[in-house]
Amino acid sequence: MNRRRFLASVPLALLYVHTGQALAQVPAAAGLRVLADRKSFRFGSAIDLQNINDPIAAEIYIDNVNSITPRNELKWSATEKRPGVFSFGSADRMVAFARKNNMRVYGHTLIWYRVPGWVSDITDAKTIQATMNRHIKQVVTRYKNSIDAWDVVNEPLEYDAPDLRDCVFRRLLGDDYIRMSFDMAHQANPGATLVLNETHLEKKSDVFEQKRARILKIVEDLVAKKTPINAVGLQAHFRPGLDRIDPEGMGRFCAALKDMGVGVFITELDASCHFLNRDKGFTPASYADIFSEVITVAAEHGDLKGVTVWGMSEKYGEPDEKATDPAAACTKRVNLYDENNAPRSAVDGIRRAIEAM
Image 1 (cartoon, helix red, strand yellow):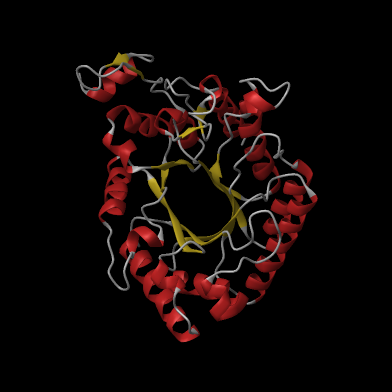
Image 2 (cartoon, helix red, strand yellow; image 1 turned 60 degrees about the vertical axis):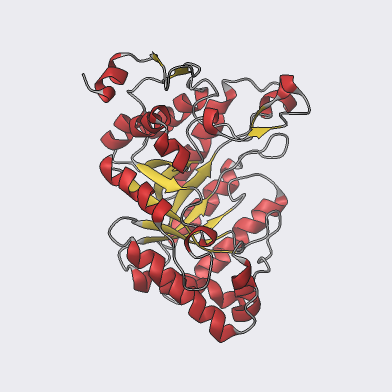
């Protein structure tokens, strides 16, 4: 019996990774992928190299998603640390994993305010434009037959404000750097789905309503200039005590994009372990509602192209507040499986949302 059949035959098997290591629980093999494939729906997750190298972690991805987003391996700081010197070893391994398991790959990200120091040190428009074009062309062309969607510009607005963020690209090229980026990416791969990715567009507050309005204006201007933008990414990171979904505001936003012929992705969906510690009335079952509602609103009001969660299992996540209060220690982000690889209610919430499509 091969390894995958063995896992499928024992839904909650306990397997030794290596002799002497602690036992790790493996979730049922009949995960969300079966449903996503049946619905022809793109459902993915952020992934790290350690997940590919760990057989149990890898199996969680194989059983649940039909798309992966390399969390860091395609960022500028990973692919071009020095001018014109490109490194794709880690990204290539991600793409190979996806190809082996019949998964799509979502590229994250081409233009972001976080860049290597040598990029930030550029002082003239001609050089930064040439540098952008070289970088986008090299990365997108390399994966032309492997990566079918890209976060072209990531987080162009300030985190908790509707203002365009100060970055080297905007300082030297003005607001038009966004249009330039999309044109460059389209030239490198005319068949790719090109996305503008932003924070807080799904949440309730006056500031976040202003962010939605600002993004709509940016997209409207891009569409008027026939810029090849295909979708807006809603990151959907939820923080305790701060974030609640705004179904009405998010719904209007998604509908307005649809009217312009622009789709939406949920690109980085996760919650926080601290909901349980800080929000009265919140229970483990409440995670199902967070994950389900944001997907449902996007699907009902917009042209939803796909959903990506920002990791599959907390077992492989970074700890948060581990030293201050051991009783309250938890991972930074809540995903679909907890620290024992047991499914959270988020799995049921996502299943419910996809089944309703």
